[in-house]
Image 1 (tube, rainbow, N blue to C red):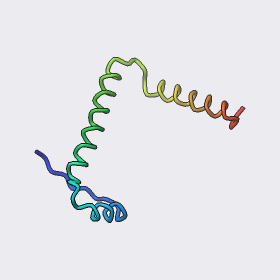
Image 2: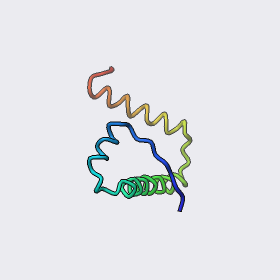
Image 3: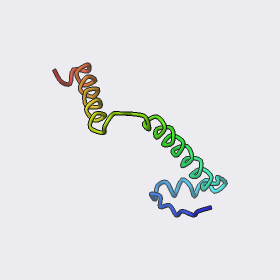
Image 4: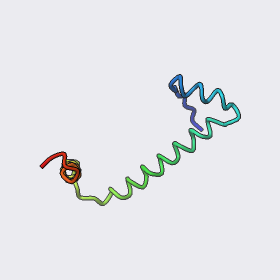
Length: 75
């Protein structure tokens, strides 16, 4: 098993210090597994996609513009 060293902000570290009964390495491991599973799913979904990155960006921009228009932020 590989090892990793993490740096956390001071305010987070203070909270973690208050709760020494929590196995913070296990919390981090679970969070990383959850993110990795989501990335694996995304990779599987995108593996057969014919969209280019530019296509995806264009679609995203159209969606953002539609939302802004719906909320009266643009015409």
